[in-house]
Picture 1 (spheres, rainbow, N blue to C red):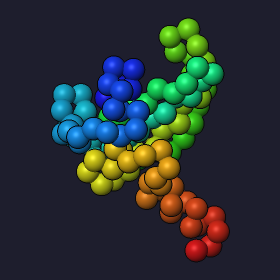
Picture 2: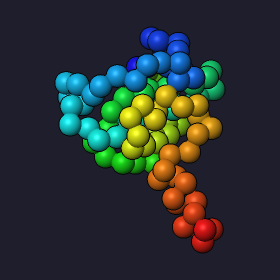
Picture 3: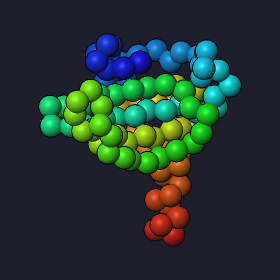
Picture 4: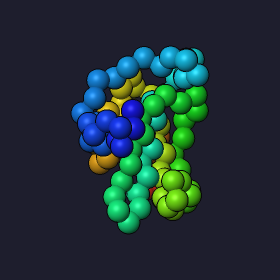
Length: 98
């Protein structure tokens, strides 16, 4: 989903759906949050790769800081932006020696 088209997508007020079409065969859920001066746009979809990264992207005439966070449990990208993925939690644990 895309929050511009489906407002519930912004906060995760959506029902998990299967990965179909180009996303079939994906093993991960992906949440991408684009932030710019006038607000945020959230994309929730399937991903074939496990990733956690941010980049500056020019989209629709504006620059967005877009952060991607994928996770492994079915529907895990419907959680709020404050949730941690297993990868993020693991990296924090490795960094702090937990």
